[in-house]
Image (cartoon, rainbow, N blue to C red; front, side, top):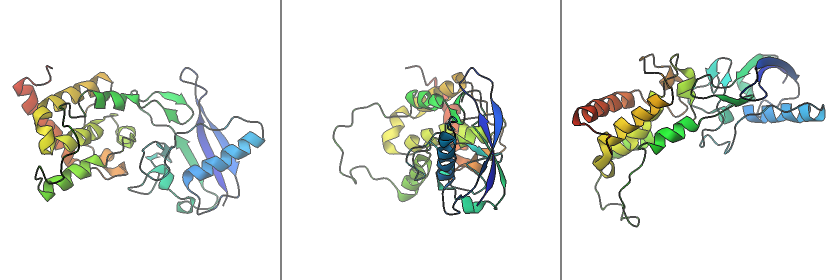
Length: 251
């Protein structure tokens, strides 16, 4: 397959970026999107040009590293998959593909398609954990958890922190990410002791990082590769309101 690629190139965080056009031939329809970029980089290196910088790690849809906008859609045109799971047979031979980094003030571009997503780490550091000492791993049934509750916590825990929700939101909100991380622990018995502190502290951290507020558009849910539900945002808002009224988050 042959493609025309329009890729955002930016030397570093301080430099001005621009789109650069490339033509790439000999792409296998069974190759992944990242393998297509590997092929392009191999060509650029042989031609003495600098390869395109992009994030990647597990290439199995687990780590959340491979975030980029493909033809204006986070992770590309197929729903519920990451960029590394997107195959080139999704496109037509001869297609033009526009590739950009995440666009959000809280995700500054580091180079080409690579952005700094450490803002997510700082939100987690604000409360996305259980701080009490729990000793060694307890027997699995020591604390009974209803299956419905366990399933809901697992659904929230599938968030891989890729940032697609932020990139797709017109207001660059991180509410879906933060809500998933809060709901994961707040749904379980072990997370109740710090439930409202967690909600207040993580939302405060999110606001400090410069993410916008939720405007209920729903683009975050539409592009999430793990299909995280907007319901978790409603749960976060409930815990945030109760926590604020209780004066939580003062530790």
